[in-house]
Amino acid sequence: MIIKKSRDEIELMARAGQVVAKAHEALMEALEPGMTTLDLDRIGEKVIRGEGAVPSFKGYRGFPGSVCTSKNEQIVHGIPSDTVRLEEGDIISLDVGAIVEGFHGDSATTLIVGGEDTVSDEVATLVRETRNALWRGLEQVRHGSRLGDIGSAVEAVAEAHGYGLVREYVGHGIGRALHEDPSVPNYGQAGRGMKLTKGWVIAVEPMFNLGTERTRTLDDDWTVVTADGKVSAHWEHTVAVTPDGPWVLTARSDEPAHPLTEGVPTW
Image (cartoon, rainbow, N blue to C red; front, side, top):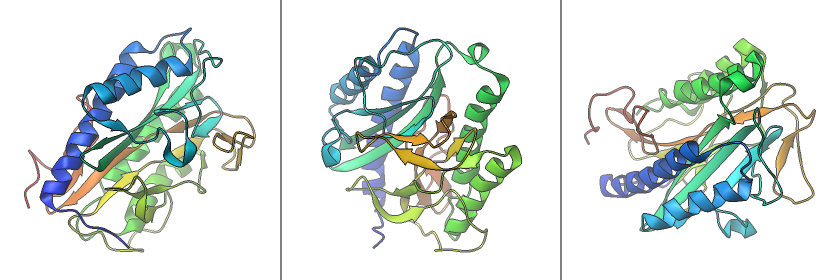
């Protein structure tokens, strides 16, 4: 069942989203070679709790961290560790969630340790184009659009570059629960699927691999990796459907919260 949110509820979710954005900004600023993934987890949790929020992920179905830290061939759900040390040229996906007054925000970024000059052109392009696919999908989050419009827009970017498009893990509804209906696939046919309506809040999250789309889960029962060991990128934002277009609740200060509108959407 899809749970629509009122404007007041979406504004609470925007507060949660901005806590997530602040955590990401702090992580981006702190990231450097030599850090462990547990160092990053501690930074993320400190920001979340410092804003009076609660980490969404810590303890969720037994997950031990506040930030999912997925390195190189890890796609999603990487567990923070004091033995996983980052080196120049690694890529790291940082998935962060926060709860404010019972409502969640959820967002992921993929960063290059040491910057783009430390990786091959194909890896740098993978990271950029996965982010591009996220925004192509977010632009489709409009009243009256279909779920297939989102998936089709994301899939088109993957196909244009020959990337493996992860199909086993998809976006989702979000609200008082971290994962709600509907599922939001990163593939599909434009004009097909459920119709989006005002009050929906969803997380759009493409995951592209440099090689195969196939995945496997490690023995920790959390960490999902590419089946061929090639690198993967993951980007995500929480977005609300408004009459005026998408409102990206987790947008950072360097991103447009309202990519298709000027100012805060009206109801």
